[in-house]
Length: 98
Length: 204
Image 1 (tube, rainbow over the protein chains, first blue to last red):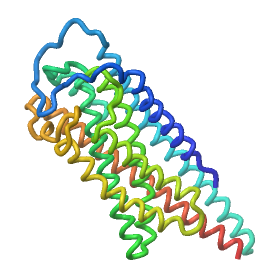
Image 2: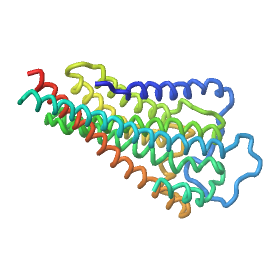
Image 3: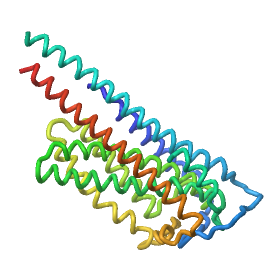
Image 4: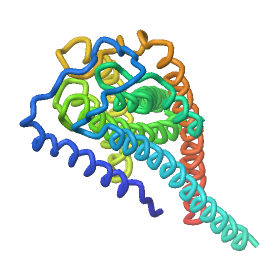
C-alpha cells in the first residue's frame, strides 16, 4: 500500500531543521527579553517597527490554516483510496467464491 | 469556529511589550496544548496495547502520533515567527524550545519506526511512545525550572479578560478539530486493518 505521509513528514522535518539552522545566522543578535510572567494588555501598539509584526502574524496564521486543512485533505484522500481498495478486494473475493 | 477565531483575536487587546506579534499566541499555545494532549493519548494507548494487546489501542496510538507530529510542526513554525519579533532571533536553544523539538522528533521516530521497522515494530514503537509521553511534563515545567526567554506557565492562568475569551475559544476550536481528526485518522487505520485481513484471506 502506497503511503505519502513519510514524504510529508520528512518535508516538515527539513523545514524545522532549516528554521533551527537559520538561528545560527541570527544568533549574533542578542535575544531581547519580552513578557515572561504575564501579559499586560494595551489598546495601541508602537507606530514605528523595525521588524514588521503583521507579516509574521499573517504567515503564522496562514501556515496553521494550511497545515490543518492539508492534513484533513490528506486523511480524506487516504480514506478514499482504502475504501476503493476494500471495494475491489471484496469484489474479487465474491467473484472467486462463486 | 476557525472562521470566527480571527475576528475574536483581532478584537483582543495588544500586549504592552510585544504588541501585534503576541497575537500568534492564540494559535501557538492551543497548538502546543493539543500537541501535548495528543502525545498523552498516544502514550496511554500504546501502554494499553503493550500490556493488554488491544489492536484498537494501537490504531488510536498511530492516529495520535501523526496528529502530535502535525500540531508539533505548527508549534515549531509559529514559535520562531513570534520569537523573531519578540526576541530578535528565530530560534534559541533554550530548554522549552529544545525539549519541544525533541518531543516532536520522538513522535516522528515513532511514525518512521511504524513505517519502516518491519514485523514487530508495533511494540517497539509503543515503548517509544510511552517514553515520549513521559517527556510532556518536562517540556511543560521546563520554563519554570530553568532560566529561559520563553513565557512561563503563569501566563495562561493570569490572562486579562480581553485576552482570556479569544484564547479559550481557540483552545476549544483546536481540541474539537483534534477530536474530529483523531477519529477520522483512527477510522482510516481501522479500514486499513480490514483491508490487510482481506488480503490475507485471498492469499490463504
